[in-house]
Amino acid sequence: EARKGEQQALSRVAEVEAELESQRRMAKSVAGQVEVLTSNLQRAQAECQEALWKQAAAEKVKSALEEEAKARGRSAAVLEDVIGSVKERSSELQDLLDA
Image (cartoon, rainbow, N blue to C red):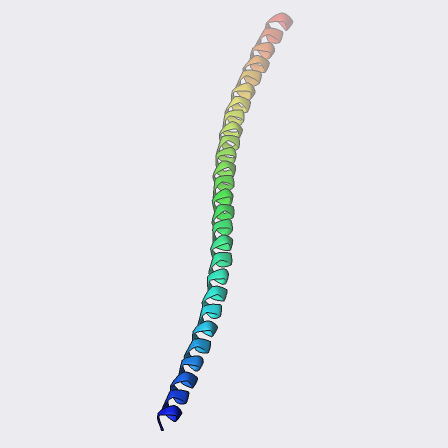
């Protein structure tokens, strides 16, 4: 009877050891997957940060181009006024010459 109990205990120990080894392998596999996922996450974060920097730079360029366009529009309006004044003065001078 004692031998039978000893055999059962040894059998149970072997089962528990096998289960522990299986769990160790599973834990090692999960740890590897976590490492890969962490690496992928870090790479994705870096790519997102780079995209945000590029977006901010593009917005600055767009703003600068819009300001330049406004300045050119103001310059064009001033030039049109000057041209109009010159034409008007030229017409007045022509009238004086014709008189």
